[in-house]
Figure 1 (tube, rainbow, N blue to C red):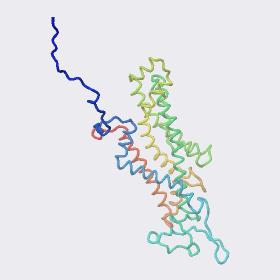
Figure 2: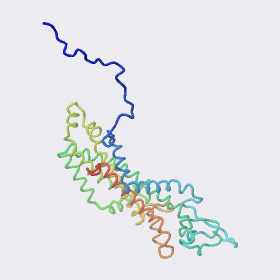
Figure 3: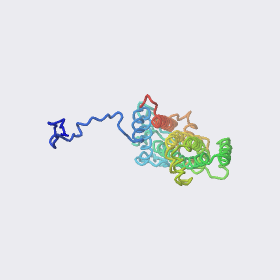
Figure 4: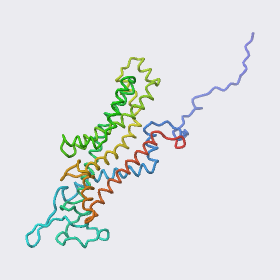
Length: 339
């Protein structure tokens, strides 16, 4: 039988018929382009104006807390004084801030006319500008140190409790309930008997109380994730409990933990300020936001301007960290309409 060629004039392609497309010729739908998890979190965070404002406030105060005392001409515990014509030492204890039009300058002693105190001085004669930013530095150090340690303790406690469950979980949660039922002032009062007043007492008091919230968040995330397929696969492949808890589940709980940390930092700052205000925190000549507020409160009827700088810094720190916490919470779990 004779073979019939049904396409006698079929086209045969050659190499010259093809051309590589340049990058400009390729259309990419950038709205749905693949992006990493943390890149998406950053995009959603910086779209939130309040979160950005909070971040700017916190960064600005942190920079001033670091550089403010360094750039100042006076030390935070230096008593500023001059010698008058009679050879008597006069301190700058009752000098108003040299900001004409804001507080006025009629109360400034002529002997201190060549000195500038932006926030004024306290009753002893120490520069409030230096002491305000040094106090902010002390409060931030206490807050960050205690929150980092509390995050490690609370996160580990909650993950272990939720992972093992049963009697282990019940026992550990009863301990949490007992620890949470003891008022913070009772703990501080007991610690004040055995520990000297100062930064150490405040840090220990915060370490004993602030980890409980972290542990509850971590336990709730563990109960939600421990039955997932990837955990079953890891267990089937022979992974140990330690690896499953801290290698597989922990990375998936970091979002809620970070949000809790952002909300815990202002709580720690406020607690430190409260403890210093009632007299069981930072002691003179060292200062913190709380001790400065307490000192200004004692002189509010005679020198009311002294209480304004620490109160404003405390309020801005609380506001800034809460804005950051809200922004992170929305960025880590964005709503469908925000996508």
